Amino acid sequence: MHELPVVQGILDIVLRHAVKNHVTKIHAINLAVGGLSDLQDEWIQRYFDYISAGTLAEGAKVRIERVPVVFRCKACTESFQVEVGEMKDITCPSCGAKDFTLVSGREYYIRDMEAE
Amino acid sequence: MTSDVRLIEIKEDILSDNTVQAEELKRRLKEKKTFLLNLMSSPGSGKTSLILRTIERLKERFSIGVLEADIDSMVDAEKVAASGVRAVQLKTGGFCHLDAAMVRTGLEAFDLDGLDLVIIENVGNLVCPAEFDTGSARNAMILSVPEGDDKPLKYPLMFSVCQVLLVNKVDYLGLSDFNMDLLKERVRKLNGGIKIIEVSCRTGEGIDEWAGWLANEVEEYIR
Image 1 (tube, rainbow over the protein chains, first blue to last red):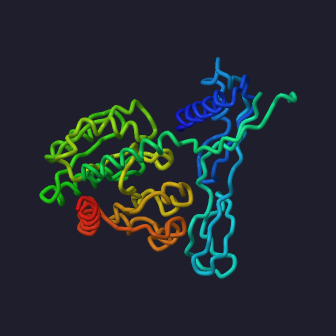
Image 2 (cartoon, each protein chain N blue to C red):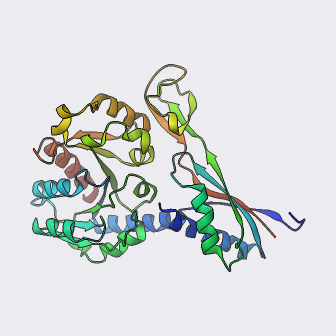
Image 3 (spheres, helix red, strand yellow):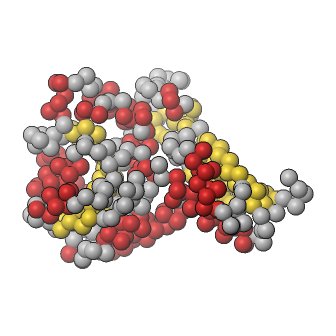
């Protein structure tokens, strides 16, 4: 739902790096987004195409790598990955405890871009 | 891909601009000794009712302001203003969430020197508001019993960014198959440190505990 302001943020950041690196054209942008985010890949690309028109990033492909949701068990410190759709009533696979901390899954960053 | 194409490392947070603004706002509010509470929930779960109950309990103790963002109608702001505290309606223009810049603009309408507590009534939505730091000192969310005990499974991020969860409309518990123990277990898996308070804005149940928790947080912050 809020893809547009997020996409504007992505464009601002990549254009800033493009200027710094004397880039003439951006081909692709690689994002790392945690599995807990609800961003829709399709809308990211669509909005990006719309707002990047006429900039160095026009036509760039936005690739999204989903960072897995990983929990660490507070009882035995074992870390384990959980599918977002299967978060119903999870227990630690090692010791069966039900108290965890979130290790990853909330990431939201731009890794790099392919440019010339 | 031509040979001129190179990989340029960026490694920057997509929301860095908002994060920077939120941090700035936190610093400013700390200086002014104004505690900002960001209240989030689905539409209809009782944000306005909870705010009215909170004002009722705490208005003698703190000077309170309310920043209304739940869509542009003035309905909520009018109800709040009628309770005797300062209310400002933000024009969110159908936006699905608030960000730090919008909150800063809204706060300009208040005299922060005279305010101990500002409550943001965020846009009714369990998805987008969770992603944007508003600059608040604490995030609170309401889940009402009729919404169901499965919401932490569907909106995990929201439950993981809040310090307190109010389970509202507990007077409906006997009328539904809502399982409170299961809800708490599901929430604590996402967020082990969260405080969970059962309330009913209609009957007043649990409101003392909530007001007590909030008053402590405010006291500690503005001291």
